[in-house]
Amino acid sequence: MRFIEEIVVDEFLPTFRSMLAEALRERGLTQNEVADVLGISQSAVSKYVHGDVSLNERVLDDERVAELVEEIADGLASGDMRPVQALVEVEVLIRRLEDGDLLAKLHEDAVPELADRDATIAVHDPDNELRSAERVLAALRRGLRKLETTSGFAGLIPNVGSNLVACLPDAEGVDDVAGVPGRIFDVKGRATIPGDPEFGVSEHVATVLLAARRHGSDARAGANLRYDPDLVARLEEAGYETVEFDAEADADAAIGAAIEESPDATVLYQTGGFGVEPILYVLGEDVDAVVEAIRTLV
Image (cartoon, rainbow, N blue to C red):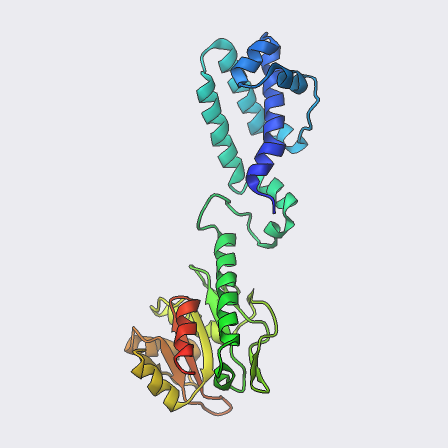
């Protein structure tokens, strides 16, 4: 684990200070004066000036870094800029370079797992895509562990298998929904989860969740169970609103009509059709809500 702040300390700052120390020396400042301005020791200045520190070529070659070095060197040498202003300007540049830019890319090089997502993350954005995705996956792992250890859960799994899914806040398609690859099956009375949750692996339950969301549901998670009128009745008794939809109609239209009929429904079910197994779907605001609803049935 390597934080982006370490990239700043180990890669950016030595390079930037070396560039600035050299620029100030070129403007006639002594090593003592450079040390005072930069707030570092004279021996450190000597190392920067004589190239005794490791420099990052990508930082050296960045035009924005070079331009800021020249601007700060001019300001500090002339007295037009105070050190505190120079510090603020450098901090602004650092934040800019951390936001999907040079420092973010250096961070990805140091931590290749960060590059697995399509977009470079804005590391200081609390709602960045990678953080949201990892939180979804973590919630699913917790939920799956609870279901796996819930006595009786295997008996709720339909013939087609179950899945527990959750989506990103602005989910638009199946790739924005995470679930269990290959679905959850009942193997000799035990719920068997074949792999770690991933995005884009659930089409069945993801389609239902996305359709419900398109028609006004606030659900962010869902699961499918075997249909049984007794299960529907028990969920109703526990306070969950239920609604039926047509299994043989277009899924989006059928689920849309059901949600329009019962906007607060979190349990959707269909009683089967030609070649279609009856299924009950539990939706919730998050994975914990879905798991809690399922555990009321066992």
